Length: 395
Image (cartoon, rainbow, N blue to C red):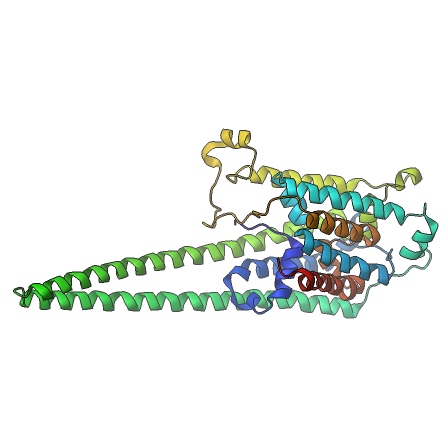
């Protein structure tokens, strides 16, 4: 469809422009993606046996106290805004197209997360005691009230998608009506003037004036036809993106759920390198991340200017300059490795290491009834993004 998905930016766009989500065409595919993503999550929650499959979709008990979750959310929001990306934007998409900027970002937040999670391990008892729940406490931040809020959020995005389609359809019809009303009137005016010119052909001044009017009418008609064609292309692009988003979102939900990203303990288990000494290290997320990057890499070989030149030269005409929607590919054109990129990625890495919360799977946890994700991490994530905008502006 030509769009690049970055979840931290996606969440930020809804928070920054909530009204546009209901009215603007550019938000149509975003609303559709979120609705499909969350509806798939709700389906999995209520699928018999799925919640206990492969050891469960969520952790049986929470591993980080709420104050750590809050700090994690704040750092993640601020850091992803500063670095302009997270595990999906810089990770899957950026690394997939071999962006040096994204590769640096991923290496930075990975290294920081490895260091932070290792420092919070039992090898350092004081830090561990402060940042981890007592395993014997058996605390789980699940609430049926929070699950009710999750259903409400899912319904909100479904309604937003429907309302967005209605607004866009209405605007498109108004624009086409305006174009069709303008064309015949101008053509008729030209024909009337031509008849008048023939009846007074001896008047050279009137004849010259008529030719000028005919030329203007022809130009106006041509512009009207071009606008109508552009409107039709834009409309087909809008609905294509809508359909593509609805179809793509479930693969994201299934992948994160089956891969264990909805379990903070699994994320911590990957980043805590001291687990090697205890025989508890879990490398499985590395394969999940590698599979995502490999799939993205293959896809980018068919996008002109964003793949490996050697491979694209072999693909020939199969390399596309435009997406199937007819639009240009909206790939980030930001280049350069800056201090903000490194610092922002480091802050995001710390947030991963101390709590094991990642923006995309956090949404699944949030609508699944876990109030540490819904009422603590997510609001502080949004606050962190606004805090960065307040300090440095929206850039």
